[in-house]
Amino acid sequence: MADTLAPTRSPATGEPHGQPEGTKRDFLKLVTGSFAAVGVGAIVWPFIASMNPAKDVLALASTDVTLDHIAEGQAVTVMWRGKPVFVRHRTAAEIQEAKDVPLGQLRDPASDQDRVQREPWLVVVGVCTHLGCVPLGQKSTDPRGDYGGWFCPCHGSHYDTAGRIRRGPAPTNLAVPEYAFRSDTQIRIG
Image 1: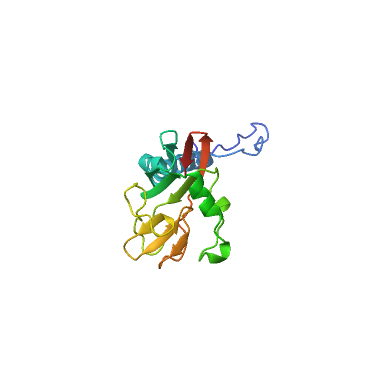
Image 2 (image 1 turned 60 degrees about the vertical axis):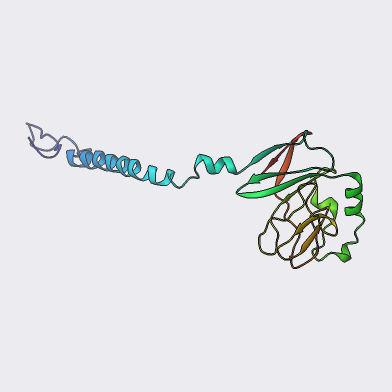
């Protein structure tokens, strides 16, 4: 059997009937190339898929917090991406005190309105911006510093009721994480 699909010759003239459309070799190359591409894809796909974050990491990407059990004046700590996040239900006096501070007195100027989405709720990452300590002030028995917010006893940073640095070595305010209200009684951090 011939290796190619050669045209047959006319018995009368001995000339080829037409041009060949392809050979067996061309067909085998096409099939082999297709199988090779599928094989490479089957080998590479698990490697690429392993670069996606694991389910437990994705679960840490956001945290839901229910607010209805937090009484006025209370605060809770939740974990988000391995960091403590402080959620405080501020009193009217704490809110007014935060609004009354002239921005010129602040090391890292930010108004209270810029730091909250809905008035009584303040959400900040509970990590001191000086050396990464966790400030005190979440419990009613904790010292809250000279400004009624949080106090970092390691180096003496004082934060006010809006999480802004007021005294001590911390260079910036407590960070406000990305969060959104899902309802009046629930927020999603992250």
